[in-house]
Length: 493
Image (cartoon, rainbow, N blue to C red; front, side, top):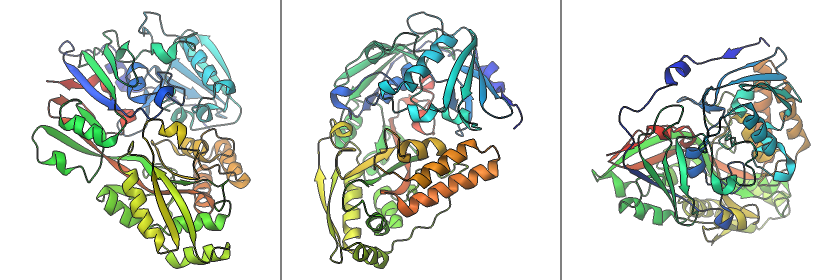
């Protein structure tokens, strides 16, 4: 592999850029309070409130408008020929909200904290190939990897890898100190969290003076808050709710294709899903095309149970038609000639989950899969239901292929929600990370997804096109996946 350097021409153009007018107005948004009393401002924790942390803290590398790696706190990055060492140059002159200067020590501290197994960070799987870090100087960090890895910049885009001040691990959950476009005024996960513009933000002063992020766990309650003007923006609007806003000149709408997905998790460590034939059957019973029409109004792309986003360079091309006869046959072979009864747990935290469960209930019944829907409270769903019940609704935000496959399905992954353990799958992922030839690496990632389709316990029917609805007074929200939105550009009239 050739040594290479990424240094965007836009970097120089962005440095020193400032808003034409001083920040003004208040932008209001909701968050789902899905972690209940475990919610925090620690970006690397399970309970992070990302609608807040994404505005307070920056990454080294962020996605550009097309999803490719682009500079944030890092201005350039390069690898040695073996892709076992990556050198990252940092942006000069950046300060944290407390006035301290950002440098290489903060990067190393942040990443060491994520990598420490005792901290149980869900972001660890994205960077666990990092074996050693060295501060070459105050603005240069060298990452030494345990294995060759040509796609390291993709990993560093992870939305949870937000840089925090060195030594702030014990206080970051409540202080929220970062280098992002907004600073914390007060934090109340169950109520209203208040932010103010960071006038020293490296990309220039933000468009709005204040932000309020309000905890509203129920999806319907968020719609009412949007209709009533209590919040200005919501990105979980369903196709069924679209007419509520389409006829009003008080709102603007954008449809944004993403790699985000919604689905149902069947735990592979709980009978009858310990049998791969049952796992295949419950997924074969789904009519994904019908689900896309019923739930998303066509605003989604069929996923065939792969978490890899549709436009990812490593996406597998899999065909997955509904097969009722095949599902019945597999169930009979597994010892269930009369079908099975299952409870599916959902919450209105994600507005489409109940609709997905109801649609699947009707489809699966044709194969003798009798579904009882159990609706549970939204508050604390991720703590009390997800990964606890044998079948539950789930959702994930888009990730690069390697991150998605490792974090969701690797045997040792902390958030392996289906408790999937497959040595062959693990071996394919390990080999893919070491492979420097792109075509060979792609074949391995594709093979891993095809293996998942045969053996996994997760029904991923589609990747969603999200419907963004905002008050007409709001401008500057990009038509991109939410972790790519440049919040400093948002303005209100």
